[in-house]
Amino acid sequence: MEGLRARYGAGPLHLLAAIASFAVATYAFLEIADGTAPLSFVLWFAGAVVAHDLLAFPLYSLLGLIAGGASQAGGELGRRTLNHVRIPALLSAFAFVVWFPFILGVSEATYADASGRSTDPYLGRWLLLTAALFAISALVLALRLRRARARGLATDPPSPRNPR
Amino acid sequence: MSPRPHFGDPPPGPFRRDFWRSPLRGPWLASLLGSALLPLIVICALTGFASHVAYYPELGDNAIVDPGGIGFDLYFFDWPTSPSWLYALTQGLHVISGVAAIPILLAKLWSAMPKLFEWPPVRSLAHMLDRASLALLVGGSLFVFFTGIFNVQNWYPWGFSFVPAHYYGAFVFLAALVLHLVIKVPVVLRSFRERGVIAPLRDDLAHTEPEPPAEDTTAPHSPAAPTMSRRGLVATIGAGSLGLAVIAAGQSIGGPLRRLAILAPRGGATGSGPNDFAVNKTAAAAQIRDRWVDASWRLTVRGPTTIELSRADLLAMTQSTESLPIACVEGWSTTQSWTGVPLRDLAALAGAESEAVATVESLQRFGSFRAATLSAGQVADPRSLLALRVNGVDLSPDHGFPARVIVPAAPGVHNTKWVASIDFTVA
Image (tube, each protein chain N blue to C red):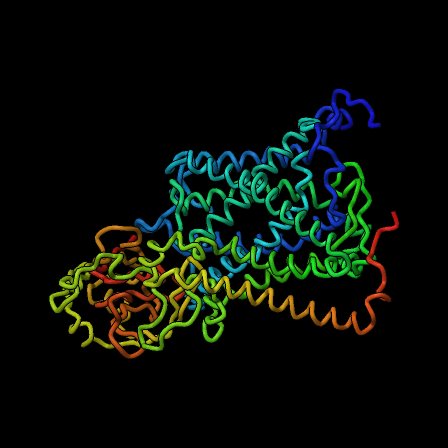
C-alpha cells in the first residue's frame, strides 16, 4: 500500500477510477473518430480550453486589474464604485457569452430558415438588458452614497484591510 | 535581495504561487461552486440521455447517433406518451440547466485557474493522470455546454455533426467528472467540515479573510486586500445563473413568461393569430412547392392495404381535438389545440395490426428529419393525430399544411410536417 503511494502518487481507488475514466473517454473518442470530421472535434475540444484558459481568462483578468487600479486611484469614492461597475458588467458578460451568436447575428441565415424570425432584435435586447443592469447598479450606488453622506463620509469606518 | 534561483524553481509569472493574489480563492470557494454546479450537470446529463431515448433510435432511420462499434444502445425503456408535456419538461430542463450552469462553470474555472500553472508540472504518475483528466474535464465541459448553446442558436461553425459530437463529448466530460469527484469529494467534505458549508457567506467585506495557504491548494500565498466579500461573489454568480435561467425558461413555460425570455431563440412576443406560434422549420426552408400542397395532394397510407386520401377525405373522417405541445430539442415548447384524424384510425383503415409502428414521410425532399418512425405505443395513443387544423383554422404552410403529425411527449421533429405518406409495419 505504501509502496503504491510512493511509486504511483495516490491510492488504489485513484488508479482504478482513472483507468475506468480514461477507458470511457477513449471509447467515446473512437465513436467520434468513426463519424464525421473527428479532427474538427479534437480541434474544437482543445480550442475550447485554449480560448478559455489562454484568451478569455487573461483578458477578463486584465480588465479586472484595470478596474481595480482605477478604483484605487479614485480614493474612497472609487473604492465604493468598483463593485457597482464590475457586477453589472459581469452579468451583462454572462448574457453575452451565452447568446452572442444571436447578439452578433452570426447565425442569421440558419435561424431565419428554422424559425421564420430574424436575429436582428437580439443586439438591441442585450444592450437594453445591459443598460438596465447598470441603471439598477447606479441607483443602488446613489442610495448608498446618500446614506453614507447622511452619516458623514468622514466618520465612515476606514476601508477594510486585513490585519497583515 | 532575492535568493539565487536554482534548478526546480518555478519560472516567473503564473507558475509562482505569489502571482495569484485574489483573497477569495481556495478550497472552500471551489467546493461551494462545485456543489452548486453538480446538480445542474446531473439534471442536464439525465435529461440529455432521456432525449436520446425519446427519439426511439432503434426504430427505422431515427438514429442520429450511430449505435457504433458496440452495436447496442445503452437504454432499456420505452419513451412514454404520458404526460403529454414530458418531453417539454425534460428538454426544457436540459436547456435551462445548461444555460444556468455557465456562470457557475466560469466561476469554478476561475477559482481553479492556479492549478493550470502548477510547478513542477508533473509530480507522479497519479498527478500526470489527474492533469490529463482535468484537461478532458475543462475541455469537455466547455465543449458540451457551448456546442449545446450554439446549437440552440442554429450556429454550426464546425465540421462535425452536432448530435454525435455533443453526445460523445458528454461521455468524455462525464467520465472525467467522475474521476474528479472521486478525487475531490474528500477535499470538499474536509473543507465544509473545517469552515462550514455556508458560514463563510456570513462575513461582510470587513471580515473577509483569505483561506490558509496550504501547500496543495489554490488559497493565495500573498493575498491582496479583498474588494468583494465571498457572499458578494456568490450572490453575483447566483444572480447571473438565475437571470440566465429566467430569460431561457419563458420559451419552455410559455404564457406571459415567454415575453421575459428576451434572449431565448423562441422567446419574446408573438402575434395573436391562430397560427402565430413558434416554428422549427419554415416551408420555404424545407422547399415545399405550392403545387405539391394544392387540391391534388393525396396522403398515401400503406399497411396490408394501401389507400390514398385527399384532404377532403380526411376531413370527412371522425375528427379529434387535442391540446398538445410541440417540444423542441432546443428547449422551447408551445402548446396548441390540434384537430385531425387519430393515427390509430388511419392504421385501422389500412388494416394494420395494433403493434404496428408508423414511418411518416414528408413532402420535403432533402434535409434532416424529413421522415420519422413512431413506436407502436405512440401510434396507439388516441391523442396522436394527423392534424389538419390548429386552433380552429387550417394549418399554415409553416406549420405543415396540408397535414402534420402531432404525438404527445414526442420530440418536436418527430411531429412530421407536410406529410406525404404513412407506412404501418410490424417491426
